[in-house]
Image (tube, rainbow, N blue to C red; front, side, top):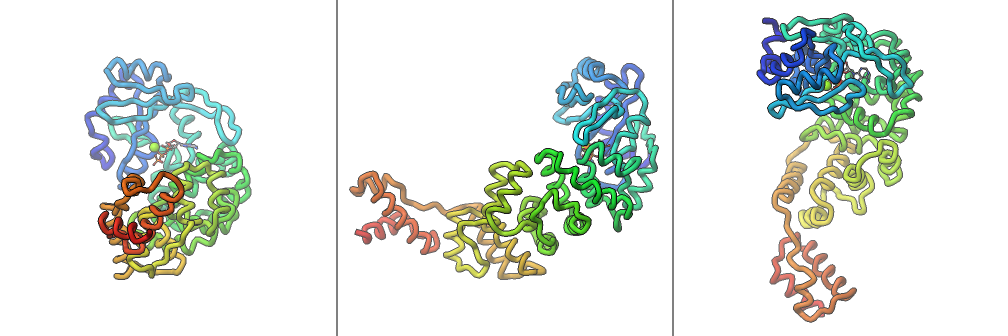
Length: 405
Ligand code: ATP
Ligand code: MG
């Protein structure tokens, strides 16, 4: 037993059953990637990647022979997903990169573990662990992990040119595991290769950048990327990350999209450019627009009636996002009692939002014909209900309606 083989996930019966199924032909599979790395530095293991010398079709046969469900996720690249007892495992046949165009590598299957380790990005991502708990660490990734050094396997420049996503992964992994500042030579390679990221799809950029922004102290790394001209091709309109730093200090829970919002300037154009480049979803777009280009701004010293009115129109998330951005930009260092009161009101609204008690049919029952006049009257009552702090009940609204005539 060592510190790796005593870990809960390593001893788990489901995990062991998948490994045993893969080993049936005598070829030992190994754990690779994040589960090995995170176990070594005491982080929670959130997914399990396995590598094996067996070819993809054999992998499927071996798993299925033991009643394990297989999804051929990327079988042509050598990856399948095994599902057992609601747990999923990514299983990849050992590979070596044959050629690469900066986005996608052409791979060949191999049975050589060292070849497979060489194509991986960083030394601490090239480690593997067998079923007995033996660690294979061909590039001293364990030492680098302990020192907080994110080191490319081989030449940084060459590895980035093979796949520009690695440049983003370099900063993402630094944000989670890095201590101190990366070495100047690697930073220089990143700067010189930065324009290559324009080849990447928006989805891949967004996924990596949002993970970077989700780290505990993303501002330090965003600033470093900015100073070294690496952020420009990713978020051309990015502002100084000072407000991001502030937001991270007082936000309630890490929220990558809100952190992104505070990094870009106010206004529709900056949101739309980013949404287009990163191919963000409609929901993400709407949230960024509400935060950065709102139809109506919410100020923190708003009255309670004004706040409820805003909540009724735009919802709790838009209100919270706007306030957090305002506080971050005004360099608030913490949430005080006043701010807490506003946030509690928003939380309360989210739990039980107040609904405007009238609908078109209430007006029709009172003689209004369907049409613009009905719409105007309904809106007048709704505006009044908002001004009153969204509290008036149906009877009060009807009384106000009657007073309109
Ligand atoms: P996490 O799942 O926490 O993001 P991970 O290291 O498991 O961390 P994955 O994206 O799941 O990351 O990839 C699994 C492994 O595959 C990595 O540890 C690395 O060895 C290799 N890998 C992934 N992407 C690349 C890449 N672009 N270039 C080289 N190797 C990569
Ligand atoms: Mg993983």
